Amino acid sequence: MERASFSRSRGGPVSSNAVRDEPSGARLLVVDDEPSMVRTLRTNLRGHGFQVETAETAGDALASYERRQPDLIVLDLNLPDGDGFEVVRRIREQSGTPIIVLSARGGETDKVNALDLGADDYMTKPFGIDELLARIRVALRHVARPGTGAEPRITSGALVIDLERREVTVAGRAIHLTPTEYDLLKVFVTNPNKVLTDRMLLQQVWGPDYGDESHYLHVYVARLRRKIESDPQDPAYLVTEPGVGYRFRSEEL
Image 1 (cartoon, rainbow, N blue to C red):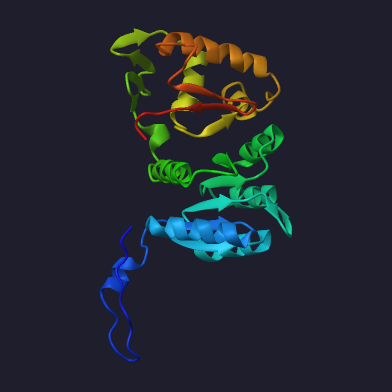
Image 2 (spheres, rainbow, N blue to C red):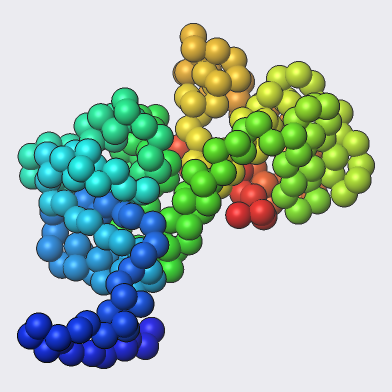
């Protein structure tokens, strides 16, 4: 990215380029206790137009969140004064601000715990900055469309779901779904490109008393794939996140 250069004279006017160079995009809060990682993320994210606040502890992260009300949080789990899980939990008690966990902890248990607490996405280090930027854009677009779950018609490629009529078509062909299959698909399409754990899906579709009956979920996902995917063995829409859950991959985001 080409950056305009300018200088300030004491007491003199500031070049108009200064205003153009100051990021004016979404406000991001980056939480990480590794200074080199903070510098890398701040530089890259500001270079793509985002406003960036940083914090190196859980306490500073929560204080910055209260003070700045960021549009999205990029959060490490290993913090010197606590655990990033507590940050997720505290923020989810107040709001639905998107949270992308970016951590060296890549175990399935950590991923599931973070997502069950309310994180929107989970990336492991080392990571590609382009992928992080893409996931940030997806999360921000989703939160900018608060009516997504109430939209009467959702389209992704050849798949069309009419939420008012409870009708599903693929390439213009009507698809018959059982009530449970439809309810499961509705949860997926109203949370596009977001990782959903088995427990989340079970509780939203089957009720709060469910959470450990993953075999129910796997059977219904398999049924949905046979009905909406052109190749159920290589799904385009209902993508498995190994050891965690599933993601509905939307072509519209």
